Image (cartoon, rainbow, N blue to C red; front, top):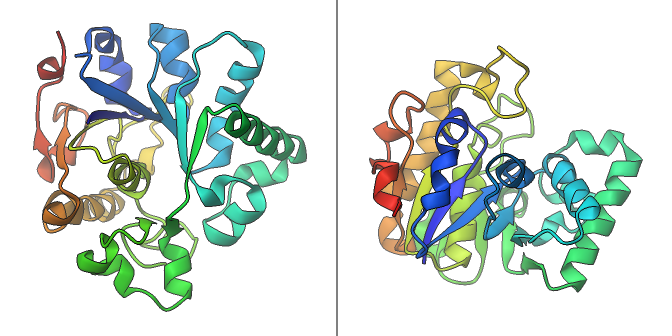
Length: 266
């Protein structure tokens, strides 16, 4: 499988309109608010949808509820995203916890989509936070154990706290979320768009670039998580990883191979 992974960064905002000409052999997976944005703005149907934070999908769940005939991308998420209680214990924190009505909407929406066959849980998924707390750091850092088929590990580094300054917290969703999911999906090539590590997101206020605070030391921490996936772990997961966002949008091309997005179009 060839998989185009899409996030909400500036490169997607600028290049997203081209995806109507995407080669049919390439499947798409969007993270967080890519759905319903890509449908509403470009009238493009995603193949798959995933997330790491329940708060980032409330718009998408609203959209599905209000548009019952819409084509829902097939959802693939780790098991700890079934409920907020599990998410809080096994992953991190989310602003949604402050809004009980949204928590209820989220949990009911996930349950309904699962019953309808529109959602797959990655049953062997485990967060590096849990592994760290269990004293199994080697399962995170040693690729022979990480990719032994017994689990799908989310989180590139061991857990060192939920605060923004922690290395565990400073990770792009491409490496934390997309690459483990792509491993589960048995993808052979993954293309990266919108996970820019710089600039803004579709949710950024006008004139405000919020991504990673655009702080160079933080950006370096994010990029360091890309390196094992694109280099030393490649022989274990077997996935070729490419950026399709030009240099002007992202520093990712310093650690990923680059393809022009036109190479993916027909």
